[in-house]
Length: 516
Image (tube, rainbow, N blue to C red):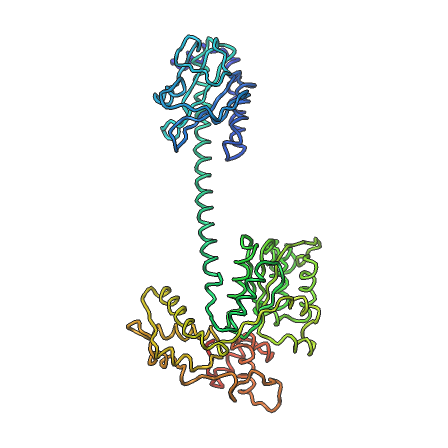
């Protein structure tokens, strides 16, 4: 028979049963949450009431000072947060220093027992055991048995098992806490980065028309007012929407975007409002819509002028009441969302023609912000060019510079595609220049000089009626592309074609596609 079996036989079975039940209870308490500080008092209570180990105390090392601080004390009659022990000081300090358990049969006879807490019975045994993490002592668990005081080694082994469970939980709790701190630091860093990228300083422009836009942005960003950003394609309407959200009180909330022109009505409804499982073929799970995801933040609906009258009524309800139902659902969902929309269409004309609901127009047009075209602020072209060249250089991982000769040429062009076209032109120039110096010759290589296509020229089809029977097929396709901002999918809808059909027409009619 082994020594272990002999020891087990010599221990009162009632003690073993009590300790096993207490260990099970302690493990359940520790598994209740990953936050050890929320469970440590419950652990000491279980030791007292179920394990007959009273006046339980947990001390943990303070990383900053190296002292032992009281982390938990059962039935604490006095404030214990002011009590601390240095290594080697008192019974607790001796346990930390040696890393070994310590039994004091009678504390009143031991000079190491400081009794700073005034809670322990000086005539009952005191047992303290180290709490370790990966072999490193990080704290002490102590208690006093009030029964079976002849079985002190048994009580010591029991406390060591509890201390082992506590050590594991402290380690896991610390790891979770460190991970949460790291995530919070990373989140805050990303928020600062995003705010920097979408702040007012990143909207380049000193022209009078842009200064007016900046003033409007600073005022409207403070409130929850619905904003309608207006302007031609490529003027930076999405940049304006970003600046509104990231400089508003909702900056810590979600910012959800959707291009309304990219989806037909049935998909647009599901995308904005979500759907229930089984609502339609392919709806295998429940899905939240963009409005639901944007709750507490901002939703940006680009190309709002492209939605059909049938869907406009559904959108009007959520804008007015802040409520909707998912597709296939009956439960009304309420949301708190700020709405920012954008369009390059003449909504007033659309209302007159019956293509856009008047009530929806007034609901969206609470605070209109018109973004001027690049032609209206030609004096901003140099600053914009410097800014965009720096951005392109960063993405290409090399140094780039733009010369005055290139700037002079850029300022002579009328930019039908606005800032987006300018950026594309500079990126093509950056690809073509070998030495990193963008000059007039490099700009000419992009084809800019040979194909200006100003909107106010005779070649512009932006105001042409595409249903005019006097137009030939090529003119109709070019007019549709012009009115759609040279987005082929939008032009196809204007012509009642599929994207594949309009792509075939562009190829066969030899239409030079404009890169905007």
